[in-house]
Image 1 (cartoon, rainbow, N blue to C red):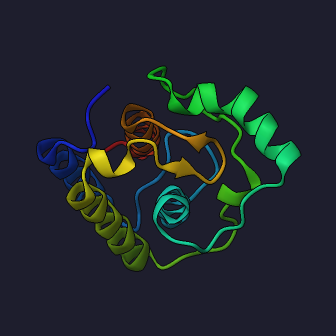
Image 2: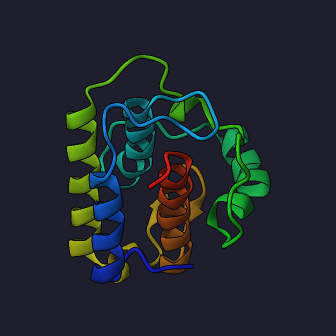
Length: 150
């Protein structure tokens, strides 16, 4: 798994994002490119902003038991995997705004560094190691950038 906290890797991800265009089409799935960018921003909103509500105890237990191992492992996501309702983006978004937001989140994550995330609580999964945060951040972005051929 590549390291999202490594400046070179972050730069490569940002370069890939900058290769997206408003006309970029997915190789699988239903999201448009603007929706995909907004979808990817949700991960960072949950990690860095206080704008999403924490799931109730029962849902958190299910997420930790069934979903966390998939999300934080190094195993790539399957194409057309289901996503959580909080990540569903069904309306059109402003491509440039979402792209800028994602790049800003990546730069913020990079500036905070891996140690900031060590033991940091995830809204859905409880405390995660910096490696689990890395896997979640990098794998999700890589999956969707591959989806759009960049």
